[in-house]
Image (tube, rainbow, N blue to C red; front, side):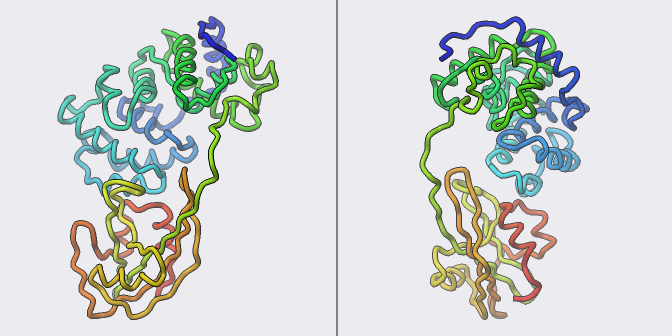
Length: 354
């Protein structure tokens, strides 16, 4: 086990030489590379792969090209642009941070590490990545890809999410980060982890660091970084009520400010099939017909959710008044709202009539 971090003078030069030939240099947030675009990309890339992010990023900056426009946008627009990327707290924090920057930093992201890291949704590694790429400041980063590279190269045992292992990886990250070409180095180490030092089947023959990699030397690339031991994900169940009126509108309900899919518009839910009509009545409507659709499973990071949709026609006399957390929406109006990805897919797959 590696117990101390020490600077490896060959690490950064080898990585930068590899980047000059093989690195990604035409990603949309690199051309042009502004603090706003770098920040947005870093938040989107948290827990999401580059290939997935590119399309979302382009749509987002087309609609909200600068930080002040993001700050002024309604939250529903931000969540609609984000819909499908998951981990929606990232989008809410983007919106909050933009508004704080307008109120406290003259409409710009601060270039001071402490001020930037204190903003919602940023934190130590993301702040370092923004400062390194947008301003060339020499700060070390430690995202998932970097943790994998450093764990293998330095032979670091232990789950990277534990405090002791994280401290050790931070020391390696800081010692290996150069003072020159910091933006290129930051992109290079992320690229290496994403494209060469992959979680499974790493391409060690293409790695510029292979000659000194402890995991490769000791045949431990499959073991490092260590995985967190955990239990099998539990399965929960819910019934989603697709209440439609005679005009084809669907009744949507905004979810609470806390919990899964917080503040997104979604479908009303009932715990069980036999309580669905009672739930509909509690919302102020009555039902003419009900038809169950096929159950499907949506996987979260910590559990699986079995969703049974119920296609329901509201009685003509039903008069549910729109309010802050409840509204009838046409298909076109639904497109403008932030919905959880499985709910959006479900609504898009509906037959024309109940």
